[in-house]
Length: 125
Ligand SMILES: [Zn+2]
Image (cartoon, rainbow, N blue to C red; front, side, top):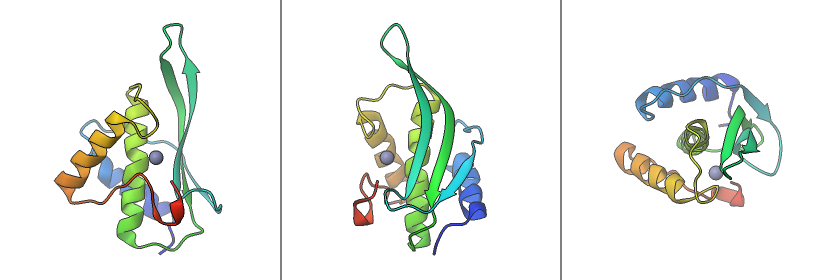
């Protein structure tokens, strides 16, 4: 299947309740048709005087170009929601897919029997 706006919106709403303990505020969802990614969290990152970052202006992008299984899209949505959860809570991870990201990914995979990964098919992230 290819994703639609309502599919993504409904899944985010569902996973926000079922998977993420602290409900994440709704953010804009934009559908794109590109070759470079399947899903993406966009945000503004501002460096504070103490060297940490402040994240704001969140936005999800999902790609309508690729035909994947429903479960694969769900895992991609969850992947992007982990990014959002980390950034929304102003957590400075060790790298974009750092220790905190991997810990959350592993916990969700085990608890909800998911297959969220860092790299997806066709080497898209
Ligand atoms: Zn990622």
